[in-house]
Length: 616
Ligand code: ADP
Ligand code: ZN
Image (tube, helix red, strand yellow):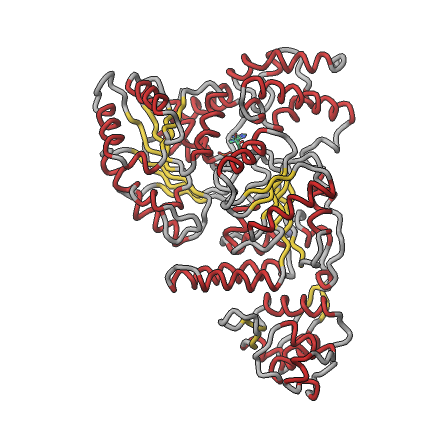
């Protein structure tokens, strides 16, 4: 059997997957051939399998470095669920457990061991592993070092972790060990950093498409009320989801009113909470169905839950990279998932201030500002969201048919005159004011400041009454997105005109306005909300799906594992469609490998049988 054929076989029998996902096969082949590999693949594309499969097929132990204990636990639980000998060494374990794991390594019983970077860097760990490698005790061989979330090694990344800095040294201490690294961060600077800091020689580099076609993308300007958040979450009742907020206080407030107003289980999560409550909320999210976590960005990395059905940004994310990472936590199982991002000019100002006041180099600030500006343009872009997003990653695409722009259409109108009015108001007031004051001038409202500066005497005073205040706010955002006006570097939200703006003011260039975002209505999020719930399937199949989920929950509770460790939704959906009648048919269901077939096959067959006569 060629090594790739063997890999295909193990894919089926161990993991229950029928085929490799795009990109996996060539990476697995390179790893099996003993080459060093750096693979850059989007979240949910199946990176873990690229080192887990080779680890199974070869002699020796694979050391996996992973940044978070929750992440390790998750992976180990899933591997053990598939019958793979894996364990995690970390500080949260009882020291006796860690000792036992070391004994198992020495006896050559484990295929994969997950280790936190700071633990791997310790002299005693390296000594132990080297001893094992050189045939100490019973001669465990170390086959390779796999580094997950490898962007944590880079200062440029959005997730730099000092404990990753020592990884290069640890690798060197393990000798000429095969090294493979994985990340979802596309950035060129980050990539170069990983190459320089982690690898002893040039690895094979694989970069895979960043498109996540199953994610629906949508963005709306905030209308300043709860309804956008409440309506969106209510449309996803019964599904797991994440609501991201910019502040700790807001996470608690939003969780409260979601519980009150629509009666769902919404739990806050932020770094200021007591650790016990925090992990209780995280565990509930991972283990139970239909929980919504309302969180700051503290919640995220390591949330390896495949069936998150929506991500809602109640405030604008920090930048385009964060946006992509955060929405990427939805729909890792490949089933449809919904995302919505709410934004406002105040959000943009806050993010700018955060960058300016951050404790980083000028270089980093420049990079961050650029990433923020890219996100603002995406919010107000007059074309398909996915095209705009992928363009940032250097990919071209057709209009996707799965974003708000493609589906709901965006009405484009000529906004040149509106732009000229706004620009004229800016220029005549000395480019020293922000949206609110300029809007007062355009609407002809004599606010205190307007009178104080004598702006009611300007020729522009009151020339913009064809638009409402809310519409002018959107026009300013769109002018910003189009690069016609720029925020003053002070971060106080004052606008100045760019060179592109000068051309529009002179009438040399035109400006296109998205009319639909001028009046963000209460668009129901129903369309994508039913995704992955079988609401579109025949009622009988949908009922069976619910029955299978109930059985899964019982099994998960009795075994003390997360529901998706038993079977992910995708497996239950496939099962409800196929209605297997015996173990042979059950083995063909997506995600049913040999171990799970043995462990749960009969249980689920019984549910299907009880559910009515199988089709003949
Ligand atoms: P990431 O790239 O984000 O690390 P994971 O490795 O966690 O992604 O994989 C995401 C999901 O895809 C997991 O639920 C995993 O079991 C599933 N998966 C991986 N490879 C395949 C495959 N070849 N066929 C079907 N599902 C797969
Ligand atoms: Zn689109």
